[in-house]
Length: 71
Image (cartoon, rainbow, N blue to C red):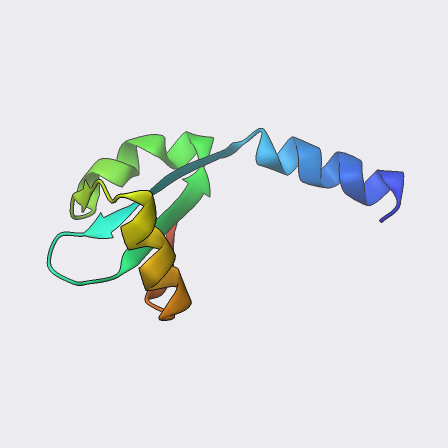
């Protein structure tokens, strides 16, 4: 990867907010990602529960992962 792309990804990464947890109503790991300016919108989504490392590993291996973009 060239340094221009690395710089761009670094700047983007500094502006992202994310939450990872287990959905309350499903057996799935949810990864929510959004820009920092949208951080308050995370509260509009259903609550995520804590998950143990073992739970997360099992759900990832089973393909039970959902990524959500938060506007």
